[in-house]
Amino acid sequence: MTSTAIGRDTVVTLHYAIHDLADGALLERSDQPITYLHGGYGGIFESVESALDGKGAGAEVSLELQPDDAFGTFDPALRREEARAQFPKGVKVGMQFQGTSDGGGRPRVYTVQSVTDAHVVVDANHPWAGRSVRVECRVESVRAATREEISHGHVHGPGGHHH
Image (cartoon, rainbow, N blue to C red; front, side):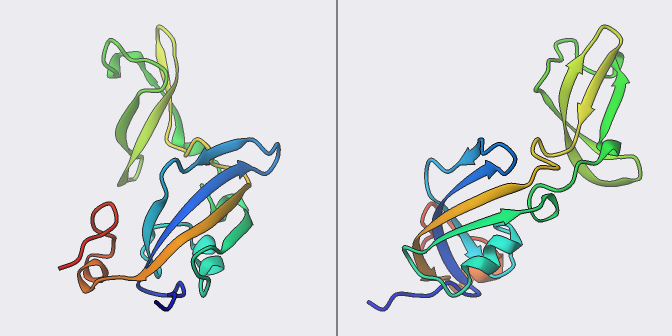
């Protein structure tokens, strides 16, 4: 078997870990390897995708990403204080509600940050917005995507499926 190199329309399975660059804290790691369709389909951070280009199974990549390339910069406009009355009685910190930002636009998920008798503070920023991070990936396998996967723009099934 020839080993496939990562390129447009390949399906890549990898393990990853994301660390906060400031203090080295582990933010997220894959328990199970993740599988995504490579080639600008939005399955993974663009800068990580370009770093993986041309690599094969077993390759390891470590990248430092600024907020813009990772979880976005912190946007104070996405943090809002709303009247307590607008929320269900049992509202708790950590609950999530869907809402639109002021200009209408795309729906965002707001996470409840704090609850008082009168107000609820919600925030639609990603929890790690504004952080610079280090992303480490280890490539498990690479295969050519099926025509169906390419037309749908994502991988099918746990390991994809064939017809």
